[in-house]
Length: 165
Image (tube, rainbow, N blue to C red; front, top):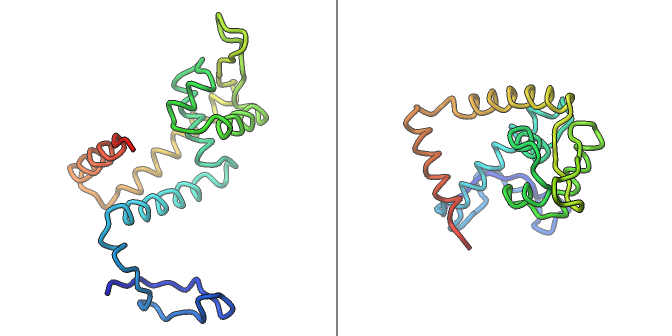
């Protein structure tokens, strides 16, 4: 039996009183790479969220802002496709970035229905600050890895991201 500690259950929870650390049976989960991949993703996400909390932007908004900064003139639909984000979700993110003055929508050449996304001067300054925070976050997350381990991990993750459903 593989166990991990958990104290999420309270006295009034359906699962009963809290369990002492180490008594939660996770069954086959700890032997699965997907389980550990998800736990690692959650840890990285929480660390990144904490790093950018003070600048009042979500990790998703930060990613979109970085991509727009490197690809001025993308349409919202092209951005959603490239990032693997559903169009309604992308609309919310773009609306928020527009409201706070980081991006602007300009008419797209040859298509009056589409709008090209561009950073404003404020958005450009913010993207530079954001990239600095992101690189610092990445450095701290990878501190315990040798350069060749980091390269190998990145290669594995890229291969996994290419798997089609």
